[in-house]
Length: 85
Image (cartoon, rainbow, N blue to C red; front, side, top):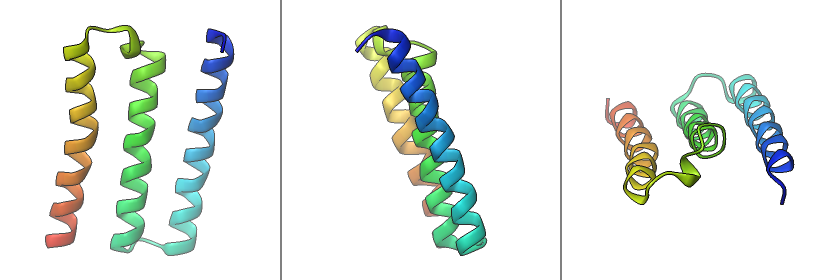
């Protein structure tokens, strides 16, 4: 896939994820399940932006792994704090 088409596809995915986040909030309110779902979507968006718009897909392997770890660990910790409080 050519780079421009990839970026447009990622941009569209980001718009859809934002719309889904709004729909979750409107449909489920502010309960723990809705918050966790929106949190997961937010970090999927972080991953997409980092990989495609900040070009981490071409970065050294250690930097990609650190970023991927961040995108997994932070939402898990935040969701754990939310669900345990």
